[in-house]
Image (cartoon, rainbow, N blue to C red; front, side, top):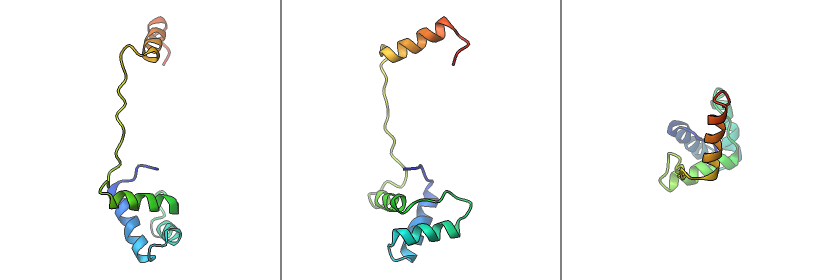
Length: 87
């Protein structure tokens, strides 16, 4: 699911209310009302509404902790040390 700002999520939920909780109709109406924004599908609107009902208007991202002795990190550091002009 895309990372939508809270004001766009609220607009989608308001339009969903206008469409009597019909996500497909809300998707079409949202695209008509806001042509300059990303046009979300009915599945996206349903997921964002469920996320807002659970109290998470802002997307929760997972934090990835990488060990400094991880084989991938060591390999990348070795390649950069070998040839500093690669990225």
